[in-house]
Amino acid sequence: MEGNPRQASTVSSLPLVVRQEETVQPPPAPPPEDGPSGGSKWLAVVLPKKSTIIGALSVFAFIVSLPILGAVIWLIYMGDYDCEQLVKLPKLRVGITVCLALVFIISNLAAFFRLKFPVPGFIVVMVLLITMFLVGLAIVGGYKLQSHAIVGSPMWLRMKVNQNDNWILIKSCIFHNRVCDDLITRSFRLKPYEFITSNLSPMESGCCEPPSICGMEYVNATFWEKGSENEAPYDNKDCEAWENDRTGLCFNCQTCRDGFVDVIYGKWWKLGVFLIAMSIMLIASHLLLFLSTLLDRYGAGDRA
Image (tube, rainbow, N blue to C red; front, side, top):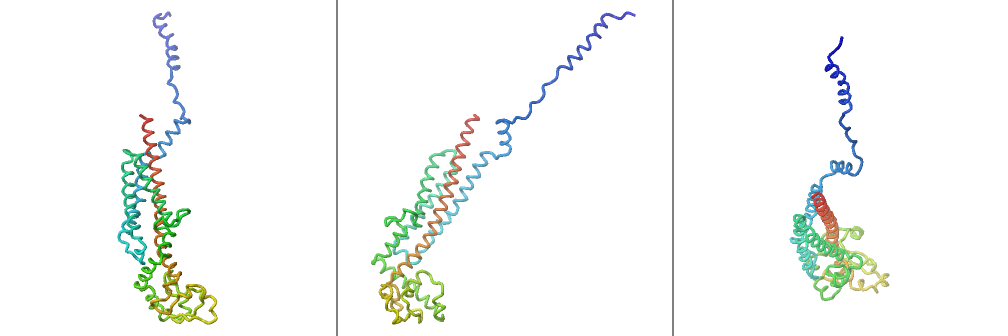
């Protein structure tokens, strides 16, 4: 039986169509990239955005600056204790107070306007912070920063105290502040060994009792007996300057001057350490903030 020729040609062409449909397939999906572009996409997902880092650094710089504001308030309300006004330390305190207030204000302004003035703000802040760091080193007596000309340094303070005109006023102030009278009141019922082993301040031990090298025997807080066997050490000027009188005691001794310097220096040394620590932390935070701002701006330029 003969078929229709048109139908036979259609049937014979079907396998060809099927084979064509089987051979045409969509290209396979490319494998995940392991190169730089793939790594950057992974880092973009894992790492925080640059704006987040810059914001965190700005907050950190503000938090670090808060103790400076507290120091400003403390310096404003701090009284002139221990007769330090006689060596012109209040003027130094006022100067440090003004400088710390400027550091607090300019530091936060530089962080707030970092996008508008990144370089000028960074330079101004760095100048202030480096100055603050050097002042702290001078106060604590840092290496090669001790000088008679640097106000507040240990060498300057000792020079002021050793000047006789200044010391006459200082020892009068110490006497009127009842430093030794308070010691006499506290030690009224103490036995000799209890008084000798008691914990005295440098000013009390230097101004209210003779030096231990003198070998004097304790009777009470204002009277020390000079033993005949201890005549040899009396070539020490402080041993000769001791007076068994509450108005004299050891106010004319070098140990009294040294004790006064130790008390004043101890308080200002803490301030110097504070200035050094705060300047280092602020320098680090503003440096990181400056670099992050430049990287953010440079990255934005590349994307554009």
